[in-house]
Length: 446
Image 1 (cartoon, rainbow, N blue to C red):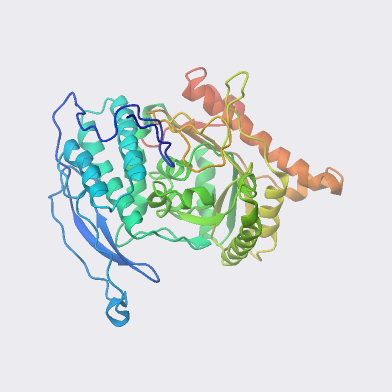
Image 2: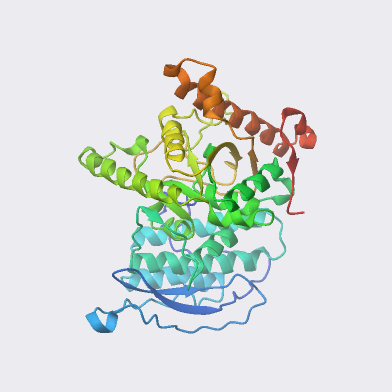
């Protein structure tokens, strides 16, 4: 019997028999390195978190750290005992055979286990595309961490608040995401456009100003890819950016640990508002709470917020197969502009273009059900920002009734122009000559 289960975060389908552990590698397997095992808590539950440091030079050690603020002793609530099956795996075979062990023990649903194996296959193949001589060890190390945290969330599901602040300790979920996605990016064929503007934004943030990035959206890994492209030159932006996130990335069990490492404002997408009609009112109320959270955050100043103005991911043209930024929702753009204007703090709106669909392309059509089929590949990525666009200047040149739409169109035009430059550079058609289009490209990690 073959398994073709869709994956909620990473991609592809597995046509091999479920739990077949006869995978072969062209090079010998390298044992992963363990650093620490921690215990942490949420508001109502005690969670034991395993921390695996991504370094083949680290010594393999493990220890438990008791969080004394958990309140477990006072309440008598039992601690969720976390299985050590995956953190103790020292080879690909042990890691994958652990899936059967957890299913047989009743700790892991069979469909989740099959999805985890499928992710392993796709991630392994993508990292091997890079030609990295350490690929075997990188895959084993990163997938061991991922397996362990997917199991942990099945045992003790994490619940996101409307505003979720990235969890950096005792387990650093931000670096977990960075280390996991980094091997999928071909940095030799990746670009950042107008790097000087990112430095300009950092200065504005230090002055207490707010910044909103109106962007296109391509994959569920966009927040991590953006952070990776900026982590060396602009760590302030990379680590502090707040992403407006749809509910799917905070409910899919294989996606949640990656979302836990990002600063998120959680909303329900308009595209999925009526997937289950009886939940529509609840979703609207939840979005209202998130908007109030955003307003409070912006009043404090020094915030940078990323929003996908189309309300979803880009899709290829069904006839030409070409990828372009999806059209922006002018109401979403206007809502962000109004929040900035009423925050009582200076604010700026910048158009941002992102190209990374090759790494983890979405399905061709918007799907209602969670569990879409995906693939993962090793590929270059691009990020470009253009000068801020002033609403008063746009409004002064058109009728008041048209200002909202004209402003959204101006932002979209800028994003599209930058996107085309990135596309030409990454696909080798134009290279670094793109500066003629008003975008100065660089590779700041070299």
